[in-house]
Amino acid sequence: MKIGITCYPTYGGSGAVATELGMALAQRGHEVHFITYQQPFRLPAFVPNIYFHEVEVVRYPLFEYPPYDLALAVRMHEVVLRHGLDLLHVHYAIPHATSAWIAKEMLRPDRPDIRVLTTLHGTDITIVGQEPSFHTITKFSIEKSDGLTAVSRYLQTETWNAFGCTACRIEVIPNFIDPAVYDRARYSDTVRAQFNGNRKVLMHISNFRAVKRVVDVVRTFAKVTREVPSVLVMVGDGPDRTAAEQEARRLGVADGVHFLGKLESVAPLLAAADIFLLPSETESFGLSALEALASGVPVIASNVGGLPEVVQPGVTGALVPVGDTDTMAAEAIAILRDRDRWHAMSQSAAADARSRFGIDQIVAQYEAFYQGNRQ
Ligand code: GMT
Image 1: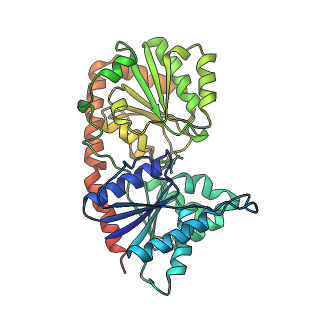
Image 2: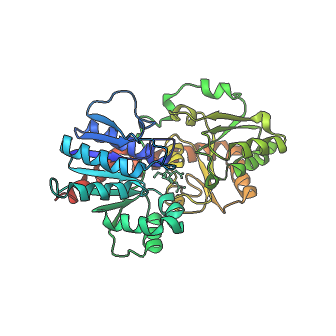
């Protein structure tokens, strides 16, 4: 098939999923066209069967807010016509599903068969989509999509509840991992040695937005390291980084906290971690938690959203109430102090991630979803 994919190309779960899906589809012989404003961050320089179409937004003094949504719709229209795409698969409802609907309307005379499929990722429904200024356009764009997927059962229900479109058919297709990439055995110990080989390594990876509660990560770490000497590795960047750095200084643990910034490849780092912390306010799935589990890292996360569909308490990690850093730290300490328990959890985490969220089975679900929505 010829598939157009639109996503946010910057650091974030939806862009990572969309890009890795595109690469997997290309490997299976599909022709994949990324249509977005920048080369997606996880897309290497050249991959056979993959094409990238940059959306350029003209700047004009009158435009205080240049209309990216319209430029995207025009580029989608053009790429569908020029390359004979079968479908447009957009990731994150706003504005991508809206632009795709506009493109579809413009394509009506030439390509009335073009399908628009939308994957809902999380904050497009749980936060942004419910803002009064976006609610009606999100609902409209969802209802106008020819096919919908959500990354968890939680997000499927949340979409029905928030937008009242109980008639919308939403298929659940979860996030996935490539077991060959997220494999603890594959990476050397040098990363671990860099953070002081004798200490335990706690890790957090995110875009440091408020919803991730990165200050809670630092607070949890401060409690853990008092009992079990540890370091905290913070991967990513975003609006709350300064607050997390300040909290580390305030708590007197700044020497043990390493802020690495945004990194494209996190698998070698995860292979050096003992515990992954994800204390999010809400999380529709938690791709970084899945990547940690696949790397054999027990995950301690908030008991919210789709995280209970990913982490199995007592088997692959623990789930705690949002903001409860005491319990989060206690769970981490208990796992870190018991070597046998840690090993059992590490093995279960890697095995469970592979059996439920392996790339081959999830990409096959997307292919079936595409076939089922063909005209
Ligand atoms: O807000 C974010 O964390 C980024 C966001 C995105 O769209 O880039 O992530 C969402 O999509 C991921 C991929 O499907 C999910 O694994 C994340 O759980 C989800 N984030 C939230 O729900 C907060």
